[in-house]
Length: 291
Image (cartoon, rainbow, N blue to C red; front, side, top):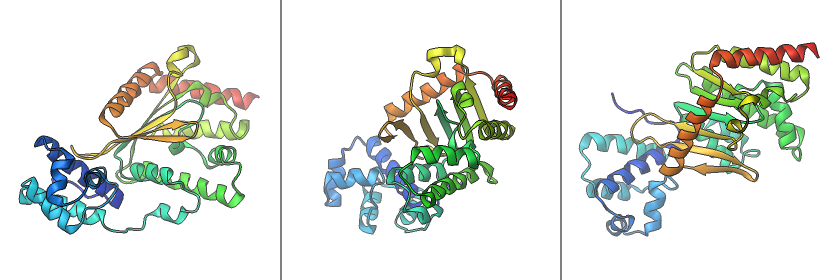
């Protein structure tokens, strides 16, 4: 079955670049070796391989010759190359006035991903938030923004959640700590509604959410929040975003991704089972209702 071509030009560029990098590595060539026949700088080769810039039509033909790409594989690479050069409007473009470049990059990866792992310590993951909960979090996190901008950011978060409910839905795997259940975000009523929504979302076959209880102590606090995105195909890029006090840090190097994958598995093992997590959520919801 032929590999699908992503709708996002940015993702297509990254997939094209990842394929070129793999072929270069297979031949033990350096970026400088490829730059010579292309007649360009090493920096340009690197930027093509990382998807930061598009190759020209001439670049494409030379690259196919350098790596002696068979016709069938060339056809797929040409489709990626052409999609990567398109200026296709995406739904998030209409929110350009409130989205940072890093947030746009995050949304692009989420849009094209097949599965996501999300670890949060004090908040419910964005893809599982109710609108009221999302508004409370956003209003605090972006207090300097006006009401209209806050509304736009909440709309973006709600639009992102469509991926969970598509015909071929995003597979969501997440771990949160008990603190995310206990904080009264937006007040007790909003938090209780959010916990009820969590239980509903956990009934979906593509959603796997687990909770690390307070009793696990340091096992639930050994790292900050992060998200990883996985795509289909051997050359599809994987990426991660780790939250930092000054914003998120983008991770796409092999070593960093391996470490985060191991960490995500460790956190999932430290957490309660899905059934036990549901029971803890229900207990917390009942406690809120009695207050």
